[in-house]
Image (cartoon, rainbow, N blue to C red):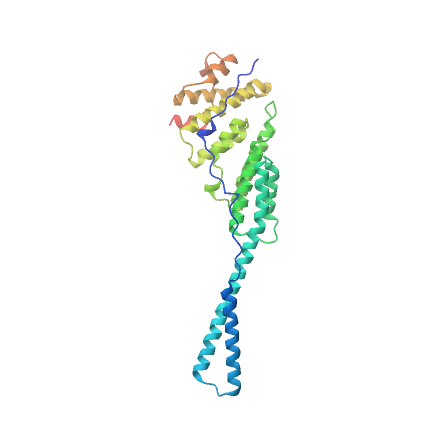
Length: 303
């Protein structure tokens, strides 16, 4: 039996959410300004003159006040110098991390996503001292980007590998949990609908379903999500029916029937799940196969 082709979704209908910038400029290391050294030198010289004056002469109240003022000024300058040194140390840490961040970005650009994810994770967890906020945010964003792209670009076998599908779902859930742990802001993450779209186009049905259901739970599925849900169910059913084993046939029929029911409920203009797949499988009446009534999109149409 010839396989009816499954179709991809236009990725333009599901834009990828913005990413954390990976090539931001590194702050220039501040140096202690010349005026600070000059002021400290003048202070020391003044204190020395006052000390010499006090040895051979009786202490005078105005001079004592001047000495106290100079001592206070010296302490303030010393504190400011220490603050500058602390800032330098913090920025040095960011500067050190930037070279590693650039390396991670390079691997992402070359499509070596697993390597990039491993390096970014090491940068976040294996350093003896924590990253500064800017570097941590950039590293966490790169880690999520590389990790998701790594699973989405996993080579797909020519047959439905349910075990591998489940592994990718578990990895996606692990990435989401780890992103929480790394503090990746929600507005900087890949939104689930983007993951669902790319996974559907790549043929990773389980991953697409998990991401779609997460988006549905968050209430972020728009009208375009109905088309995506239909494509996901129809494509997976088509794949199981025409490339899977006989034991996959019941699941394939249920998926195709659910896609057909969604097309009817929402008035979709095209319904290849019925017109091509179910009829090719011997079902002249597409409504004769029971759909999955618990599917959230189908259930919502009946409310």
